[in-house]
Length: 152
Image (tube, rainbow, N blue to C red; front, side, top):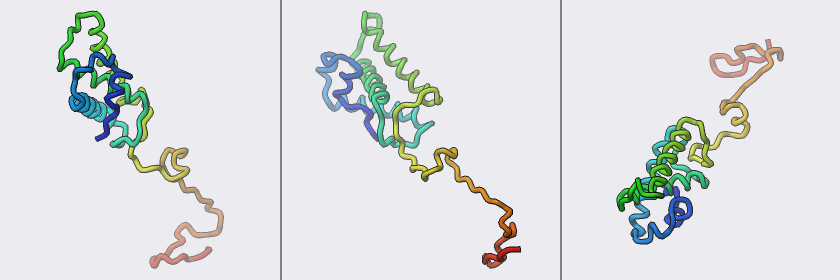
C-alpha cells in the first residue's frame, strides 16, 4: 500500500507544525497509512490500484484526513474557534473522495492498469477492424484446414 503523503506534508497541507510537534513519527505514519487506506476505498471504484503516481490533490486529501484522525485521538473541542474548521476540512475531504468515486472529479493519478496499445485510446479502448468486401475474395476465405481458398 502506498502512503499518499509524507509527515512533512501533514504540516504543508493539513495543520500548523506546532499542533503535531508532540506526536511521535510512527504515530504520524500510522495516521497517514490509515488515511491512505480510506482514499483507496474511494479510488478502487474507478482506478486499478495500487496507484503508480498521484498529484497534490491526493496528497492534500491524505494530509487532511490524517490530521483529523490524529487530532481526534489527541482530542480537540469542535466548539472552540478554529477547531470547527478541522471537522469541516474532514467533511470536505470525504465529499471530494465521493466526487472522485462517482466520476464528478478526476484527480491527477496514474493507476496500475496496463497501458493501452497505441491508437486504442482514440477508439474508446477497443480495436476496430474494417474491410472492403469488393476485393474479389469470398467471405469465407478459409476452408476447413484453415488454408486460404483464393479468389472466387
